[in-house]
Amino acid sequence: MQSEIRILPVHGIGEVAPGDDLATLLLTALETSGLTLLDGDVLVVTHKIVSKAEGRLVDPATIEPSAFAHQIAAQGRKEANFQEVVLRESRRIVRMANGVLITETHHGLVCANSGVDESNVAGGQIVCLLPVDPDASARALRAALREATGTEVAVVISDTFGRPWREGQVNVAIGCAGLKPLSDYGGIDDPYGYTMHASVIAVADELASAAELVMGKIDRVPVALVRGYSYTRDDEARAQQLIREPRFDLFR
Amino acid sequence: MQSEIRILPVHGIGEVAPGDDLATLLLTALETSGLTLLDGDVLVVTHKIVSKAEGRLVDPATIEPSAFAHQIAAQGRKEANFQEVVLRESRRIVRMANGVLITETHHGLVCANSGVDESNVAGGQIVCLLPVDPDASARALRAALREATGTEVAVVISDTFGRPWREGQVNVAIGCAGLKPLSDYGGIDDPYGYTMHASVIAVADELASAAELVMGKIDRVPVALVRGYSYTRDDEARAQQLIREPRFDLFR
Image (cartoon, rainbow over all chains, first blue to last red; front, side, top):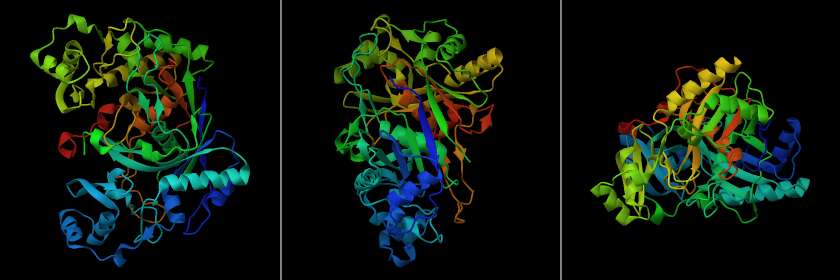
């Protein structure tokens, strides 16, 4: 039975630059925060610092906008150069209205502007893209932390996404390593003997959401440590498992 | 700056029956769990026990299915009587395919089967509806807890919903009292001087998701206590604020 879970902010990461070693930055920040990694901990890491370390930064001014990028720009408030960056990060446009672009990224994620983000990037003109392969980024960070400390942790890489029908964004998992992202209760009898169908919980998304509560948007806390959560360890886990196959999706 | 948050399961609620006083059951369970309410705590309560206490239980066998309920039943795996219960809880059908019904409830919530739930209800044949007014239920529980203990807490009433594009369900807020469900960072400068637009976080949903991690589906822990989260108190708050106006929604 699950007991108390603690959500701990990891302070002191500071500015991350292309080429930085995230595991080293993280371990230093954990020490600064008075925290030591334990087996079973979950680290939730905002994609932004992963993208920065991986050099996924673009100056839209250096990108030649296509004719279609100009079309999109004319219908919204963002410039053609920005829209061109978004188009290059997209494999499909899911909705386009009111100056908003909901796209499917090359990973299959569906979100606004393919996750291209203008905030919290030094200089103001530079935009930040999603990591090329957030699952690989999560696996690499998990392996580096294991090598450095000998502890077995899970890593979730997160971004805040909007949702249909509901106001506000929530933090979700776009990369995952070490824990099963979906917890399947299907086929298990409830306490009344009713066999539950389709009771699959996206625990990686819930962990990302829980972590966001200590991150804030302006506090510059890009990492949270979740301690005490009994997850199912899975060395092959990927956040890709959270993406619904288009043929089962009613809202494409 | 936000410090540690604790997510504590509240054990020992047991079976809830129509007419039960939820505040009393909850305070007894908190005592059993060795917990005392503190000012600023957030209680996340699964809608199921609220619905049961409010008598929102129906035996589909007593409901005469309409012609359309028979039509729906013929296309899926659920019986016409069940579909009739769903139709009566719906004001609109958003999608209907593969035997799945995504509906808009009378509250404006968009979810599968208008939230009508077959699991965890005694007898197996009885289904559980959403509370008539989950915000009112949350307000009543908050007021009763204040009266009984003198503490100012916030209350979130939750249900697990599926999402477009992503596998698995997550726990979201369908009722809310005492805390601002949306945390607005719009117009605030980030540390680089970029003024953030549209950075609204659905913190009530994130609190519901965090709470689900200690609830589980088969553990019968219908309540979690979130301690240490610095929320914006709002005595007029309603989870209705989390429902996007149809005219701004691209996925109706």
